[in-house]
Image (cartoon, rainbow, N blue to C red; front, side, top):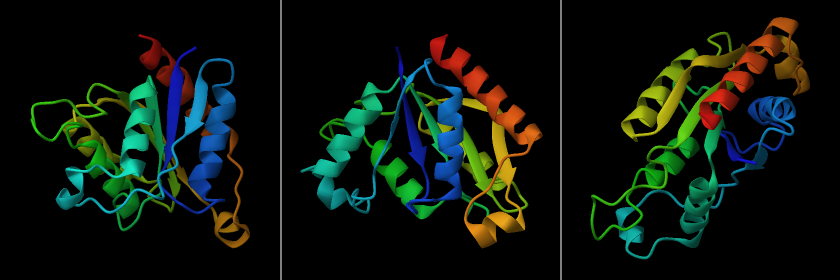
Length: 184
């Protein structure tokens, strides 16, 4: 069975995007081995650290290399992706062997898709910018379909949300297409 790595762009334990990832995970049961990338210990990108790559970065790269596909679930912050996600991607965009910058990165050629739960914009700006960055990083990006969820007031006041039937259908379609994309 192939391995899918979920990356959640929020560190909050009960984040809406972690909840969305859990919903997607249920749709992929018996299709993939699913793991969540924990990356809160990855330091800020700093070229001074590259010569002696920090252990958290080494660990994250190994998990990325073991994945057949990556699904990113992210909130939208100020019409873009969160800084912590950008920091992770900055580390992953660097060659694994810095003595030769023609060496591959951990993400080159990886199949990836993006979903997000957020405000009325349904994370559209974030996903568009993130797709552009992922393509620049030479990843294989499944841009359609992608799921964007506009959270209602109850989510912001109660800290949890339920998907509508239409949203479930959107996420299910993305899961099915991503399954075919990864298995192609």
